[in-house]
Length: 614
Image (cartoon, rainbow, N blue to C red; front, side):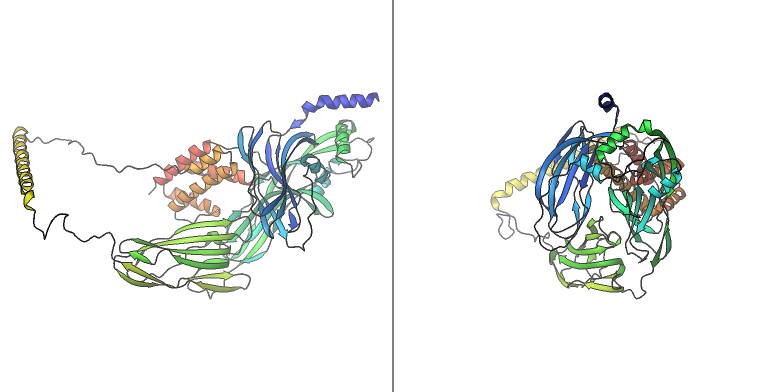
């Protein structure tokens, strides 16, 4: 009895010494695969926060709220870490089948605006049945029960190396090993673990030959439980990307490399066996006695995934004339904003391309404009869901045109061709024909007689006004002539060695803050958005300057071309450092990245230097 009291008192005094994690805001679901008749439990959980306010309920577009919001609070203890949590829970029912999005929530955590991660839920069709009401999850306790039991002890005769080999591994999975040029491939890097380990990415994979699009935020925060070789593993999603092949050939997706720090408890000879199937409460109390059962030791090991070889097949050679690289499945519609346009005015034709495939790489269809119509380069707007494979959404191309010659013009039909990998054939879409009427410009008004005049004659009662105006003009002209002659006599011509510069009127330039989006993301503590906006703006400026298409795989070529244009080596080093830091944030699994405000200053300097290049 005395030992039990001492043990409880020891726990009481150890409570403040347990490791407390940093504040974290995450989205958790009890399942990632359900049917249309199931319900889904979703929690927005903040951990280790002193203050949690201004929670904004997400907009569940694909789900109906069955229950919630329900607020719960508590503590959990795992791996010698005490976690305090507060959760806002919802019970949802899907409105349709497919790959549905559970949006992240917004809240203020310890004075900072934070956004939790998004989740993709696979919803399959099912027969009608009444959903069973479910109580909200307790995130602390459920997390303990769902987490696979860690194999962290080493008994006499056991090998730490063997334990690591069987319980810690990195895998690369692809949804296909062969594809056509432009056909998407999903590559997923995962870390499987049953050990007490901390991991970080030490070498990022190269994906040369592909245009790369992340399907989830590559921050290592997404975890799930999967079975491998009959054992349950905690699986960390390192990165999941959608790859669009740019050209034919065989390509190797390089492995990802992780450095791991693993802790084992080497048991004493007299230590009893570790029971399997322990409850979380039993495991927690037994772990307090670990120091008496053995000694802790650490092991460092570097793991790599196996590379994957992808064969990219060329597209068939019988491509239609209107094919410009689109691969997937699409529909095309067209709308003339107005069929009647005044001469000298601008008309607009809108083409809307919808479907799934390599949408980000699809260019505007070519239009054969009739003689007499002048067109401008089209503008493009897009709404693409890059979290699904293949990417789906729409692109709108707006063509502006004008004409100075009135008349009727026939336009179209506009043709657009794409390659369908499913049928392995080219397909061509066409719009309707349009008749455009160019009318005489409404801006040209015919001359009209002034109000009050008759037949062009000047009313007699106005002749004194005209006479006074004429005399005033004569007097003014004579005064100017007299003043000019006197000034010429007084001023002797002197040739100046350096005549003063005549000020040239300068058109006022409105400064545009190209990093405004990144600064707003920083203000909202949106780490992913901050680095994403910087990468986008830098890419647009750099790739445009060196005449390269925007692609993360062409960074080295872009640096080379900038060097050839004479950009300073210091600027090249800054640009390379910015890109490396952005990549590090993208790939570092579980990293506690923060917003680096210095990146804004460096990016401004790099952009200014690139702008000055010829």
